[in-house]
Length: 149
Image (cartoon, rainbow, N blue to C red; front, side, top):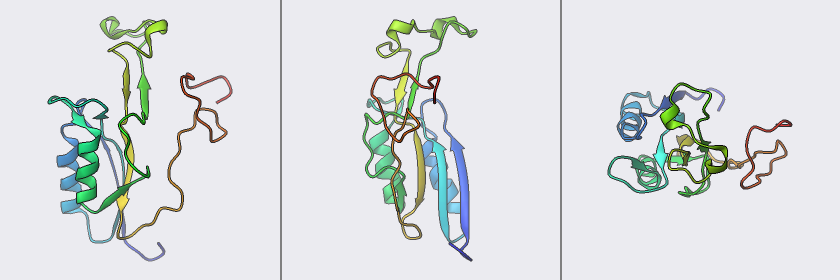
């Protein structure tokens, strides 16, 4: 990319992800010509709902704008967020028992995180992979972080 103009952007979406598409459009409207690399917590969701932004709707949006993602394809069940609050925080109504962390409706398990880039300016040499071991492996159901990673 030597000598090329590149815009770097970041965005942390609203809780329901409903501002993600408008924010993406606005950045593209105002970004100078050249490549764009955009890291975002898009706050997209696996399950479709009128109150949240579905991850596949987001994929349609960013591809229609000439962008690609760090993932080869968007998969609704490829979680980048798996969060359950403990009782060691002030919002006790949002706390989840350890045994229920994977099943509680209060746990946040969704495909939220993306690195988007201009498909006309950049090519992917290697797509992102999930890793919860530090060895480029992913073990389903393993808590993260661990004592070793």
